[in-house]
Image 1: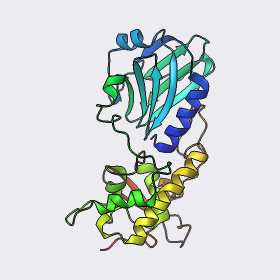
Image 2: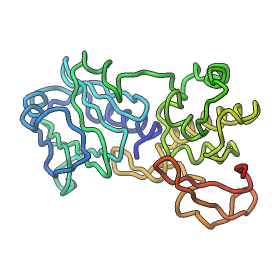
Image 3: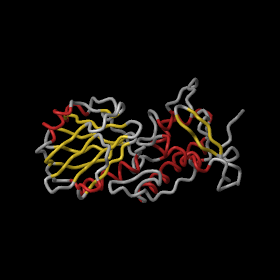
Image 4: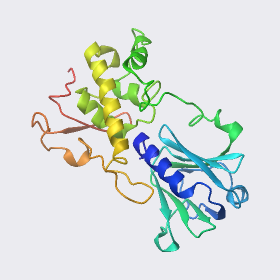
Amino acid sequence: MIELPEAVTIAGQMNKELSGKRIAAVERGHTPHKFAFYTYPADTYRSILEGSSVGESTDHGNAILTQIGSDHVLVLGGGGERILYHQGGETLPKKHQLLLQFEDQTYLTVTVSGWGNVMLLQHEELAEHPHVGETRVSPLSEEFSWAYFKRYFDDLVGDDSRSVKFFVVSKPGIWGVGNGCLQDILFQAKIHPRRKVLDLSSLERKALHQSAVEMLAEAVALGGRDSERDLYNHIGGYQRIVHSRLVGEPCSRCDTPIERTHYLGGACYYCPICQTYPV
């Protein structure tokens, strides 16, 4: 699933390869997919995209926003999309939900696994869209300081029952972080995903902020996580600390076997000693 590190990586690569290119042909929905989210019928995608030029691509949390002509934005990311650049037709995937052919005979393909966005929006629609309309402070920015993050906790009320996992991946949350990046962030901070956010000590809250900033910066610098691929189909260079293949393997800190729990719609991986949870 594309999260902040991959969105930053792919947006930068799209700027390098696609900016200024003119779209010659479009195929939307070549492979039917129930959870590929479009905004128009196939013929409308063609009428908007064909003949238009690609503008700047920017990361937007876990999404990628690409300017199309003067009026539209192509919204990718936020899910299980494989977004690939092809220098010729030989490497095109058999299954895809969007294919853009450019005048220089290069291509962009988007293939959805699980679910994902392949949306076209008008500029005036963007701000009101429920998934990509909101702009928050990026955890990669200087503005995302401990003083800023601390306000999230200061706003909590006494009966707030949210867990740390829910707190991080939802609102106010850490923009662009989903269940994937969450695992290493919580492992490094030594916090169990089921802990109530109100129960975290001041030191644990600071550790959560520091862990998020450091993990995300490293993953961006290394071109994304090793579970994901970039625009050139290369695996990211950030090696995850805890994940599904490490269940039962010794914790890198204390040698206790890593455990798995299913919680809030996804699996969580943790060390039961380093990341304790009150019984």
